[in-house]
Length: 317
Image: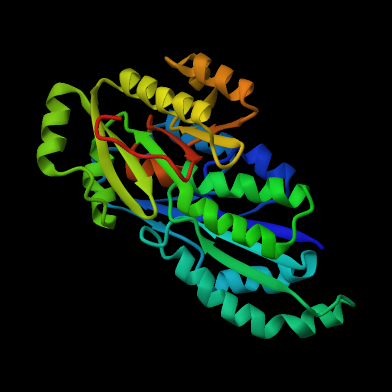
């Protein structure tokens, strides 16, 4: 059985990794002030976005424009129902983007129209489609996608993979440390993110305090504060090391950075994290943070995610 995966471009996995495993990316357009920018997870375009500072603080208005239901329906009926027998579509949390709702709307139309298309191509008529909200953001979206790829390579069947992904989604935890608080306060709050209020924004800006953000099952909260970005990164890596040693539910840990990903290797605490991952056979996937993520949390932010059903988040960590 040919099983495919579709993600939106907010999924923080390396483009080379996605291309190698045939994962299709739904691009997201970004309107920042009067500028319209395409997010296709293209590595060179993403680095240019960061290097040229295409998202300026004086642009308070920003919005993302994902594929609409009609565009998703067309993509499936013209291509995916012919290339695959079953497709998993894993989207960013439905609380932050309409793409999950658009994909669900498209799925109803796709499942009512695909049979004559496959019949005309000489294919078995049966086709399956599962649309899942990952209930998470950025690297948190990447963890179940990486696991879906692994399970497909192992020969898993759609029912087995689907059940596994549902459990993994509920067990996935994402941590993020911003380099600057402007974007989270001015933009993410407009999408329902209440993790950073005016007082915390003002005090943090004055004192250089950075919030440690945590996303799990659609909810984003502040779980700690630290003085300085480097100290925050080191704390995130320490959380990951301790989690790997205690055990993870999937052998992947995803990291994204709003800048050149190679610099992650030189960040405080990374060497210990890399060694722990190697010792426990956990794959580290390091990618540029998507433009879509950077518009909401700011360039220079770092995020990491893992799956662990018994992980308890404590204040200060």
